[in-house]
Image (cartoon, rainbow, N blue to C red; front, top):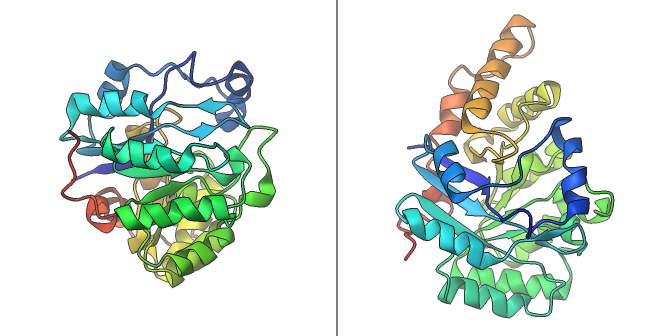
Length: 285
């Protein structure tokens, strides 16, 4: 079974500011289609058996996703789609929004980002949300790495900042998106130490040298079993991501670099992500 653990859904215009939209070209040096309809998301992710879906809540950088938007969409295909709530601790209603998202909207995890939202992940306001997530058994997808908006503060981006959270909330499942790039080294040593911290490989294939080094380091540290498949849709697609995985394995051979295992793409692609995150029996209602 293929699980795409990293896809976005939002309404644009409306839930992304124009300033943010103008900055998105920086990601891949090409135009990104931001207006994602329910029909388009469903069609473009159809090759995945299960799909995690979320927006992002970060007023500082222009992400204004309403959790009702995601909840409404995932209800259209509850057996395949799993919705996460976008939460930003800088907002006064953040803690109550977690309760509403879970109990009223039926969402099953959280999406959070210190760098996009401009908040310290070790701040008490954030810690209270992590405590509630652990209580509910909610996994948290963190964008804990660099990003493109000018206003996003790098000082809150390093994956090492999540270590104290993993220690204080040992049962909290956390996923570090994009292997925490460009701090993949820190991400790898963190997921090796902390049993409930994972990383996804989304949106890395189009930086092949960085991607190769990240995967090779994961091999050397023995943590490839903690790498989850994700695409970062609509920034990248499933086909692109799978092709990128195979290409980087082949490139390591062609260039006579320390090899990546032949079966690494399949290991990652068919990972039992839902079981690892405690979502294996979840359905949306």
